[in-house]
Length: 356
Image (cartoon, rainbow, N blue to C red; front, side, top):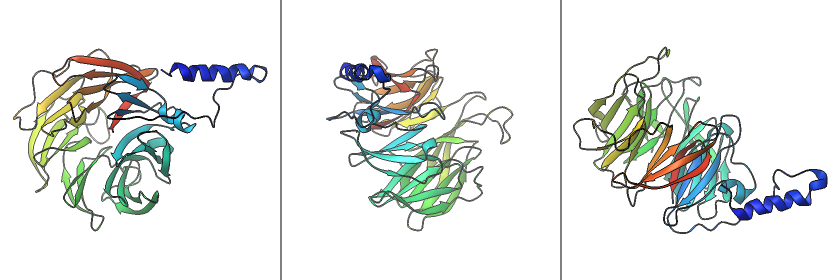
């Protein structure tokens, strides 16, 4: 919810303009934030084509939350479908998918310091240096190369066996000079990119539609597939969790789910030795495990678990609840041992996170 001081500010604006009708918002008026210490940004996706994406900020120490911080700090809407955030050197890079833009914000103030535009349908950004980054795309057979200092596109990486209609690249993790990326929508591959040449130099086939990609403490890549859906033109199969050796780029272990399961949101703890995911319930497994767990870390709560993050310092587990995809979503915070610590409301469809 908006703080009382902001509600009073809006009320005063309405009273001052009674003769002309109540203002929805006074563009140009901004609030000054000064977030200190550790904190968590929540990226609220919003509804497709409604332009109601937003950012929330949560302080784990005080258990206080501020909603609509981007709007309030910048006097403008975040945009249409916020997808992800990457944090680097005090700046949060917020990817807004259907607005074709990435905003750079100061993490202490939530104020915009720059933006990258002219993107197709951006998903994630991965930094190679202060002056070079990759941006994955949906509905594009290219990964964009950008200069973050100048906020401009400088080139492209052509992805093999993709068209503009079937193009889909998602999350990226780096191993040495190589960046690995999972290809999701109507795809079944992990690509290996040489960052010195900006060329795809390897492909690894996995199951249908790998949704996530993470790198653990042992140098192993983890990806989880969703298996497609019934009557999909690309196929439908049981989802699978894969463990891939990053050095040899080969599959080492496979963990098979039941057909009809929908595992997603693969995450690692701060130590990189335990993975978490959503499959109705919240599940957790050591990276050295030989088989899937039989009992969930947290059971299904008759709602829509939509996003997941692990506090890298404490191991606390944060679960995003989309509720009904229309009203304000909710975040549940649990300890590393599964005790409920806090719960709070955010914006519409909370789905991604960024730690500062």
